[in-house]
Structure formats: structure tokens, C-alpha cells
Length: 135
Image (cartoon, rainbow, N blue to C red; front, side, top):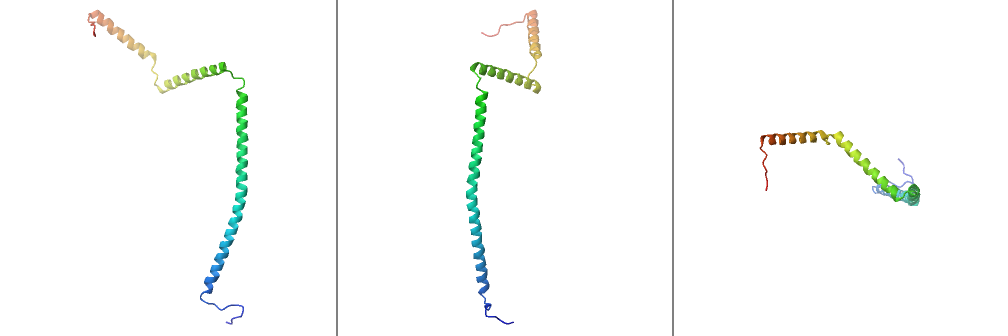
């Protein structure tokens, strides 16, 4: 094995120096790439966000304009009629839901209770056992 003049002789510290140089080179290259990427990101991200905000603002303006045009011919009488119709519809839906859920008892139960009460009163009158209670 012949040593040439251009090749330095291997020493115990030379592998550490070469790995340190490679590490610094890779580290600087990473910082440069990261810096270029961040510059591009900082350039295009606000531009995209501003464009998105402009589009959403224009969309909101169109929606408000449509609402104003739709409610131009609306006067207070129409609002009162709509409110009344809405209340009637709500009451109808509540009644229907109560019937479907079984919570709304039919009027027959009330009538049966009244008939039983009247029969008891008539029975008590026939027997003469009606007493006034209270003072």
C-alpha cells in the first residue's frame, strides 16, 4: 500500500473532522432550503388568505342584497299575518306530536269522569246523604 502526497495519512482525528464538515454542510443546506421555503410561504400564504377573505366578503354582500330584495314589499300587516300563521302552525304541530306520543288524552275520559260524578251526586241525593262540609 503506497501513500500518495495528495492523500493525507489517516489519523485518529480525521474521521471526526470530515463528519463534522459534512454535518455542518448538511445543516447549512437545510437552513438555506428552509429559508427559501419560508420566504415562499410568507409570500403566498397571506395572498391566498386575503383572496379567500375577499371572496367570502363578496358572498356575504350578495346574500344580504338578496335578503333586502326579498323583504322589500313586506309591511307590518304581512309580518303580523306571518306571525299568526306561524303560531297556528306551531300549535297544530304540538297537538299532533302530543297525539302521536299518547300524551294527549281524549275528551272521552273527561266526559266519563263527569258522568261518574253526576251519578254519585244523584245517588247521594236519592239516599239523602248530602252533607254540607266547610264553613
